[in-house]
Amino acid sequence: MFLERSAAMLLKALVSLLLITTSGLAQGAGQRLILDSQYDVNEWPHADEERPTNVSVQMFINSFGSLNAANMDYTVDVFLRQRWNDPRLVDAVNQKDKITITSNELQSKIWKPDTFFNNVKDAELHTVTMPNVLLRIENNGDVLYSIRTTLRLSCNMEFREYPLDFQICGISISSYANTEEVIDYEWASDSPIDLPDQLEIAQFDLLNYTCKDTTQVFTTGNFSGLLVYFNLRRQNGYHVLQTYVPTILIVSISWVSFWLDPNAVPGRVSLGVTTLLTLTTLASGIRASLPPVSYVKAIDVWIGTCMIMVFGALLEFTLVNWLANKKVIEHSQTMFKIPRLLAGSDSAETKAQEEEPSAAASPKTYITYARALDRLCRVLFPGGFLIFNLVYWPYYLVHQYMALPQSLV
Image (cartoon, rainbow, N blue to C red; front, side, top):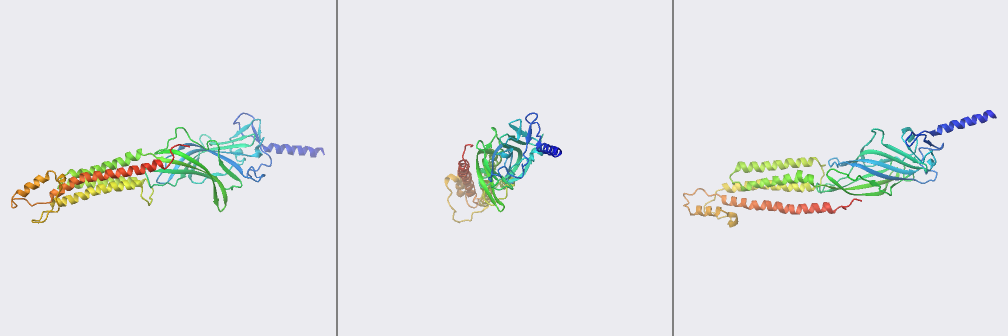
């Protein structure tokens, strides 16, 4: 009888020793985490109550990378913080009110939600100088699980108004294996999304964000999830300096040909062809940074109009040079009378030629009409381009600035 009692006591001591696991000295010496013998890491905390475990999620956006238009993605450095209550861990912390667990082995023995990012392309967990993972357990069973990770997330971008556009990019999280009967996600009531005071995003302004709960329905079941949308407005300074100003100068240079003589063929041809090729090269560089979408973008409207202007100036020279060298057939009817405003000094020259004897006069051409057409285009081309600007900029800027709220939530 004595031997049986001694053996039972020894067995009980050994079992108690196996159930006591030391966590590491995160908050002082002598801290211990005592797990119940029935604790199952594969069973969610409220399985006995047959209800899902509420997981509160909060994110701190440490940095927000620039949006990649060609790949339609963006990068964020985020601190993902999840909180839940595990009744099995009540009074499991010995000597202290809470304990921070740093041991990977012990962390693997605690139940954690299998949270994943639905729209992630690539992810990296920071491990310098230690794995950036925090698991804190309080004596009332509350658990805080925080990790730092860098994510490259997909974003369905719309480029109809590029580069005077705004984009809505989001982060979607849910459970990978546990349905809504096991895990119920919810945003933290206090600051679900935390942002640094001086957050800078290349080429974009963060206007606001929107948090919402969602349920994802798959053939494997219904899964609770969370969504956060970031409303971003593109800054105009970069593209104004790199795209709009150079194209305006190229178009303006093409108008110089209207002041050259209609017979100055080398000068006018080289000027027209050079400006057209320069504009084509600039347009190719812009298209290289964008995905090959099928719809017309705002930059396409701009580049297309500029090309029409430059190509129109080249075609105008072709017509002017043809008029300047076309001989007037004798006794033929005059095409039309040139207005005095367009005739300029050519009216006196034409009148003098008409008074000279026809035999002594050189073959007449339509040079007067050619010069009049040049004078007309000096006003017509800049005026048309000005009217286009008066329509283009208000339309796209008003839509860009009025489409989204201006204040940050």
